[in-house]
Image 1 (cartoon, one colour):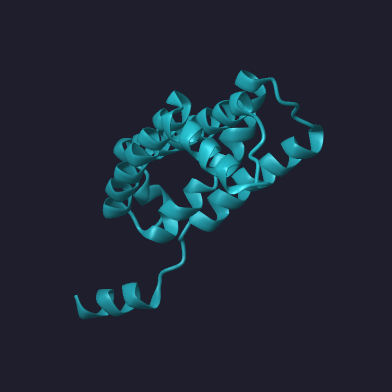
Image 2 (cartoon, one colour):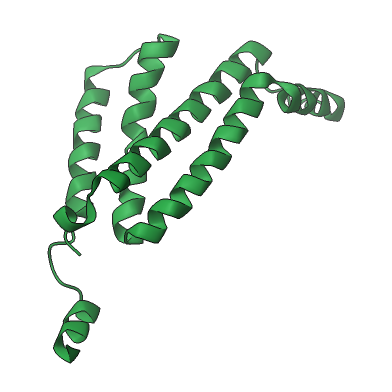
Length: 144
C-alpha cells in the first residue's frame, strides 16, 4: 500500500483528531500537576491524598476522557489503514506537544528542539511511505 493511496480526507481527519486529543490530554495533565504541586512519595498517606486530588481534578478527568476518545479514533484509524502507516503518525505528538506547550503553557522551545521536530516529521513520512511491495502483496497479485 503506497502512501498516496493511504491518505484520503477521512484518514487525515482521523490522524488530526488523534493528535489533537492526545496533545490536549497531555496539556491537561501538565496543568493539573502544576496546580497540585510535586508528587510526594515520602509516606503512604501523602500518596493516597495526592492520588485522590488527581482523581477529582477536572483537568485530569478531561484528560482521561479525551484519551478515551483518542482510543476510539485510533481503533477507527487502524481499521482503515495499515498499522505500519498509522503508528508512525502517532509520533507526530512529539511535534504537537512541544509546540502546544510553548504556545499555551509558555514553555521554552529551543533551536535544537526545532531541529529534532524537523527530523521527526521527515522520519514519520519516510517510515510511513510503503512504496515497496511486500511479499504478501506480490503473492496476492500473482494469484489474480
